[in-house]
Image (cartoon, rainbow over all chains, first blue to last red; front, side, top):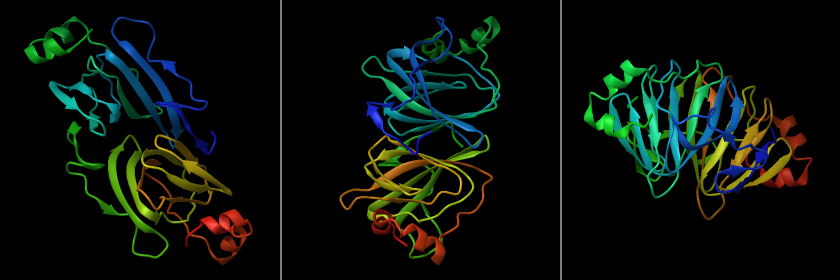
Length: 144
Length: 144
């Protein structure tokens, strides 16, 4: 990696590829992924969710450390829904359901720090969804 | 750590202490440190250098992965001086002299990702300084 990688457009960087968020699916919508750093056993990625879009509802053993750097949005962590503003921080503990949603008016962009060596995310099965939907606020929030 | 840590002021966060950058010294000026995350073997810190200030000139074995998130500035990495804008990325390789400076007009704030288990920074001795100062641009840039 070059010592200095300038931003070339709004949250786009010289030589850093804008990648698909995940394999095709209907469980996420309007999300891109850019890997900013792979260093010291960790990766720092930038995800951007377009207006009205959402990340996958998932959980895994590794921890997500998130900092919002563009726009605003909401997230589910466990059974709680949080309103997010620019520069807010989010910690997703191990094995905790989480999903990020952009508002209809603007994109939501955030940094996400993860270990390079990590387990794969798992999506909810029917029993998981039934448990999640037992809370009306969570039922209204989640997108699958 | 709470799941959601809101920004409470400009680059200040609920429950996150604003710490001194390092022990007292004249080798840095006007720098604060906030540890945003300790997760998965890494730490993500936010450093802010006030207008006209500078970080220490130092090197170490661990890698620094930096993203500017507030203002602008300049940095030395090895023998090169880079102009930095908001959202620019900087990679400092192992054992590479580096120093960040804020402009006189505004603070420079940046995220810095490091391994939790890392070696201590080392400052230049007289021979190191003589070598650095053999380049006039570097000589004019560095603050010790």
